Image 1 (cartoon, one colour):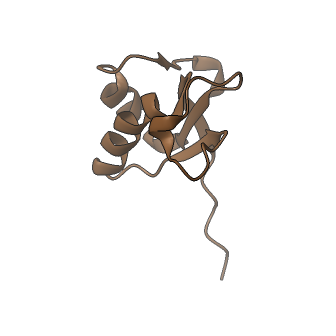
Image 2: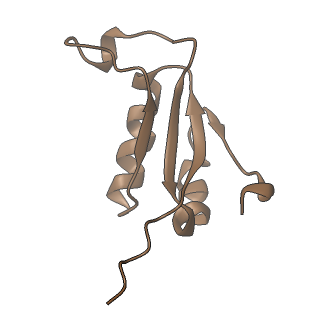
Length: 87
């Protein structure tokens, strides 16, 4: 029996602060799309108390969910990634 293939995670958006990414994260998860959040964690006070960071926050989704994720993220401020060279 072969092992299931692990998903390839790709970047779909970047935000300057975690609190700006929260609504897009919830929208993707609500649509059934798993999301990995890469960036600095704000600590004990939560994302509302953390301002922009030098590294920002990156949202990653499985590659097979890229198109649906980009469609969902279209209505949000931020920097949706639509690089065809990552396919």
